[in-house]
Length: 332
Image 1: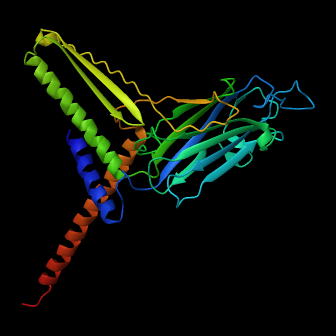
Image 2 (image 1 turned 60 degrees about the horizontal axis):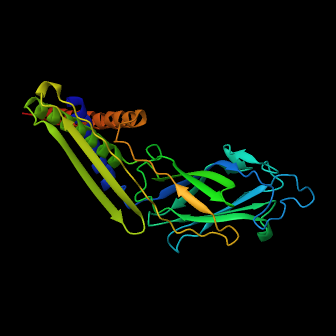
Image 3 (image 1 turned 180 degrees about the horizontal axis):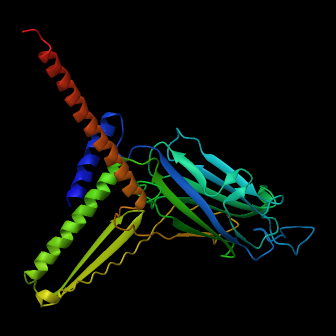
């Protein structure tokens, strides 16, 4: 416990130094990164949205999907970002299914990376899929979705989780799987401090529970249900059931948590694709855990903090030694 307290004191001091040097808290401030990863594509048909063949000269060939992604920031001060790749003269020509790799095209990495000056609700991603080229007559489908399920970006890229997005177009014949990750850019000592405090608090709560259990808890079961909702966003119902045996030495706690999330997004679908739908799966964040990288960061920060303390002690010692030496050389 003493080592953790030492690390805690070191992080507090370093966080204060960073704050006085112009650092900013992670919440609601700082640049935000949005990563959009293309995973898989599947379209077994050989025709466009208007019913015509994808390749007029070779009707038996599959379509050559071309993708256009428009990232629309929530503020007018930031310019939308447009990305195009695929089509006839690409590796995606005449493909029934695609598993996207690290490169979407020459000089274009997967995932696509977008940047926001700060997090404001909510950026929008517009996705258009055509065949052969980006001519409107070659349309396969169009979909827009708002990142309204992201209430707050994650604190770092390492702690952020990929959120899968399933895009279904052309009566569910065209299936595209994407993944999105949203997090604050850079790493801050505030985040490491918060995780360390949360870890210590969790251990204290566990110890308190063990002490209470040995004191003789009352037998029975307690059920707590809480429901939170926000118009237009999501409804979350959480049920926690705790069962305690009557014997103090054989205390058992069973916790069940059910989370039902329904997200409603503003969706724009092309008139030729009335059945275009977008479904999003969200993951419940895990409890804060110190990762290997964060432990290394804490160790390095504590090391420099100890070096600073040693330097101050040595400087004071040398300064006082010089004064005493001056007194000893003074004539009587």
